[in-house]
Amino acid sequence: MIDSSKPVVEDNEENRQLCRKYCTNCQNYKHHSLEKYQPTELFCSRGQSSATSMKIIGCFCPACELFTKHHLRGGYFCVRR
Image 1 (tube, helix red, strand yellow):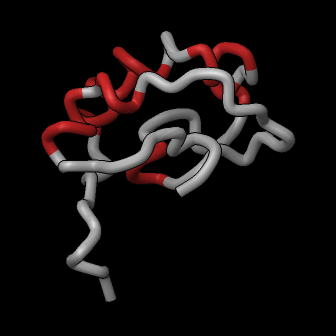
Image 2 (spheres, rainbow, N blue to C red):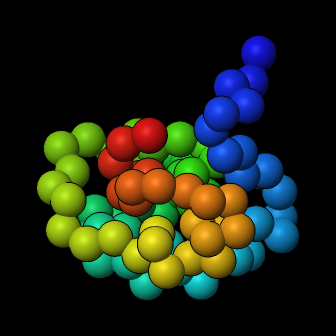
């Protein structure tokens, strides 16, 4: 059952394209080479990265169009969900 109190970002190609504009430029993404781990993008929909021992060093999530559109809160979706 989906918790309707939490915003849901659909995992689709349109949203992945929007995400790539931000995630691939994010300090956290670059520093930890998150393109090498699953999921590689759209963490707000797919969950945190399988990379381990990540330090939180920067976050572009709040600048993302999906963040605003879906009224997301927080950030660092690649590290925590």
